[in-house]
Image (cartoon, rainbow, N blue to C red; front, side, top):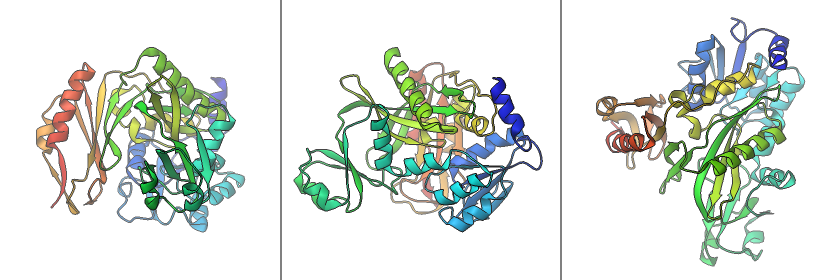
Length: 392
């Protein structure tokens, strides 16, 4: 533990100092919730985002409208920071590498972000380090895929640029080759899984690692986005232990400083395979704000500023409901049913401050806590049926 505090002491100034500057690349809802936690420590947060309407704009200590994919913009922004972090991994890594060389503390480290940005490099990393994952092959274009004799169904993933289910598709038969991506891709064996699982893991510079309990997402089939999240996951202790050990191994092997969301498949034969990871706070950790002693946002802040980890213990069962923009609605936001759901027990509403809604856009989430998962599920479905994000 002394190593943790020595890391803290080596920093130019403590995080609560009025001159300490914590920079965030990205001003979306993840940054917003991170800032809400940082306020508890008197941390000054500074945000770079390309949108003037970014959710972080009104609550950050300062806001810079600019492209976090532009080398010079990121360089100019980051030079002023004591610590620089991200809430989205699609950022200019070359600028982060230069900032790191100049003495800015960049977490997660640029080389890790760079590896994760490329799903091909990410999969190869798992293979090279004996981290369980599905079988895969890298192809340079559509022609190499369609003429490669791959067993179908298979999963095709763009190596770069994909997010929130975009850039990923199942190719089920020869007839689906027409829609195949014509770009460098990862072709993965189709995994006939029993459940999808997720583990949030945090690691600080001292090598202290903490994992949150395993959770289980349920996806909206049309949007391919998480609709419900159940915490804890309905798995036995053996699978829980295995999942957390795998997440810990990924954090140890990468050497990441900060937060890592590890998405997993539980196969029908009891295997646990890594699907993908995200080097930042994640949709599968929102419930930790109310349901755990220390939230994912608190853990991330502690990890990147050299503070000791908090307890990841879950204090009560929880279900998270994603609030997605209603189909057929685009325009100024109208929240319907808010008063009714706030009258329900154990309901915590988080709206993300987005002014315009679109079909299936992430507009907020609701966490429901209860004395049992069964009771939380019941209330969560009532929330889902009642609370709607529409256009005025």
